[in-house]
Amino acid sequence: MKKNTFLFCFLLLLAACGPKDGIHTLKLLTTNDVHGYWFDSTYTGSGTRQSLFAVNYYVDSIRNAAGEENVLLVDAGDCLQGDNATYYYNYVDTDAAEHLFTRLVSYMKYDVITVGNHDIETGHAVYDKLEKQLGKHGIPLLGGNAIRNDDGKPYFRTYKVFRRAGLKVAVLGYTNANNPAWMDESLWYGMHFERLVPLVQQDVDMVIAKEKPHVVIVSMHSATGKGTFDNPEAEALDLYRTLRGVDFVVCAHDHREVTFHNDSIALINTGCRAKYLGCGTLNVEVRDGKVVGKTIGSELIKVDKSKADARMRETFRSEFETVRDFSFREIGVLSTDLRSRDSYLGMSPYINLLHTVELKSTGAQVAFAAPLTFNGTVKTGILVYNDLFTIYPFENQLYTMRLKGSEIKNYLEYSYDAWLDEPDGPHALRIREYDDPRNSQSGWSFVSRSYNFDSASGINYTVNITKSKGERVNISSMADGSPFDPEAEYVVALTSYRASGAGGLLTEGAGIPKADLEGRIVSRGKEIRDCVYDFINVNGIVDGESVGDAKLIGSWKFVPEKTAAKKLGDDFNLLFGQKK
Image (cartoon, rainbow, N blue to C red):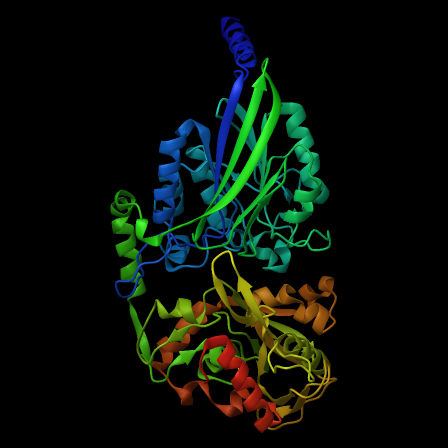
């Protein structure tokens, strides 16, 4: 009885302790898409880079200036993939009492972590354990639109309420609604993902009614988008323009550095890899215990990589050295440079390596592969484990599927349509000039994502740059010279990312309904980076001969050759400042 009386009185006291009259200033600090850029030192050489160590310098400075009790620190996802350290602590050092990420974010006093698609991609064993570890530090892993299949409840928490700046602040978090397009269901089994519109507004209304917060923040691993309500990957601007009762929208996923605000709401996206720290400022006027007015602002603070927190660096020095030593393990010898950029012009040792690995690892008849590093280079010489992250940076599995010959052809047409300009255009490659005054950068880039530029092996074909969409690809035979039959069925090797429908090459290109993809899968294999490691380990030396067997991988090229060479060379020079 006494215990219940005390609890009742305590709750009454909390209710009576509303915000004091005056101006309350809340600072919202944000990061997103850090992708494992935790350490400020590179693993090879003595170089430095962007890092959470440098972010922490700015976070501490703002906390010292504004008062820690007035600051919230939120991450909008994609924390656990993209670097040697994430790989090592996800899959190698799995017996540690705490994941390194847990220790880093608790050190930095993050308040909220939002689930990104690449966090889900690590699999249940990683993110389930991480959720429990973070919870012990009072840091929720939020993903309110990941819904359990068994009971219809959120798999992750939807929100948490904080007391900051003398105010009650609610933070709601959501993952990418299009997660199934990024990975196989084996990584997210037991749940499904709902679109953020209208779910977020429904949750916001519920939280406002239940918690009566003075400030509401929505953090989502969804891209900024165009506000057209038609893209499950990019719902942030949709919500920014329609949400009621929300002060900040924190978004992510597209690596776009952007922030803007109007009189009542702000949107913040810091891009990626700790280049910027998002900073929102909310001034709340309270009169007679009630909120009577708000003013809002937002900015992106450029993070100077040289300002890395020395104390934090020293605290995690042994972990860095462990990852560095792991990265320097010698695994083989490379007798020719591997340059991913050469893949945009045709066959190259880099893309030939991926094709060879896929075909030899699976026994498939055809394989699809794309350059997953936009402009990476591995130099001739001793190969170390670190080089594998340049060759294959993602944790994709190697799958095989059944495809008809006509579907293979249509798949390739779709790929090259994103890759190549129209035949009467000024360029061979589909590129555009950009000028970004936010960071004083200008130059040329592909219009589409280069990691969707799939080429094929196991067949012989040409791609005619003078032809229009749907008419460019001519498949002459299989790699061994036998006929290629549009009506025959072939076993095709490809990534789990592609097998899930990502990039649209199977669904929009080959015309296979998304619901039918699962039934086309023949096998699910190891992670492709591990397959590359196995190939190098067996062969010892990677050279043109070991990855260039025409009877295995076939051949392909752009035609007419003289015209293609000239136009492609000019475009290559615009993109990279040099010809091949």
